[in-house]
Image (tube, rainbow, N blue to C red; front, side, top):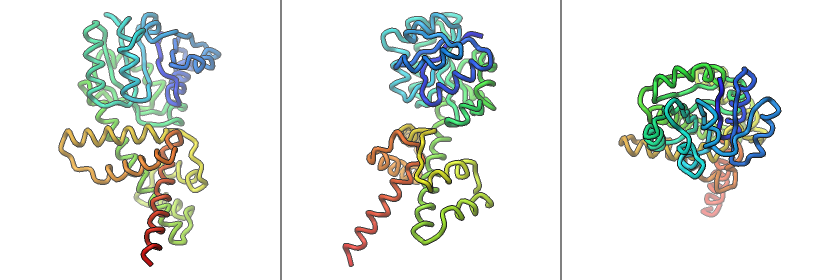
Length: 299
């Protein structure tokens, strides 16, 4: 099975590598073409443009950073639309809003191609281990044809119906994750400020009803101020923004998510956007320190 792959960031590189390791023929493209070289050592071919990749491959997967990147790869010069045609499928695994997926789908259908959105739940390590959760929607036949590739990249895939549902599900999942990370960060800062051991807090959480893999995985690094990026904070904040827009569309009040988004925006203002999203802890620390200054000024 020959597959094209567009976008070799933290996630895309790991996903494409898994396809190669499991015997898929893969042609890769990245905006910075030098990032393709490592995969060539494992048998990948390089496409000079997205259009060149689509021309060569029956199926092309994209894993891009945000809606603007997802749209550019499709609609720009030398983009997907220049070569998509009957018998070719395009699978966008980027995290975008439903409107972006719908726009891409309509353009692909006008060229007689087939489209599937398939955003993933999971970060760097699950991507490397082929343990992502795939949230697909769109052309059912293309979904079934893509299952061999999905089984290599993920541990479970869901088909959610019409285009837009995959994007919406991913935004809901990431909204919950971002809100949890902000609450977790507040707990770590509160424990430390109260004279408690952050490590013991982690141990207590791991034994209780709110134990979860994210706290267990991220907590030890966070208390060591280690924010090596598995999922960049700038992408988490983008997802929070898109989820809040989805809430607006559906008249859903989301004050917890809105507060978490403000914390992630503060972290971005501290130039932490390229660090792991757990670096929101630093924004909580800054808020605490500002609160202390204001309290002292009233004394």
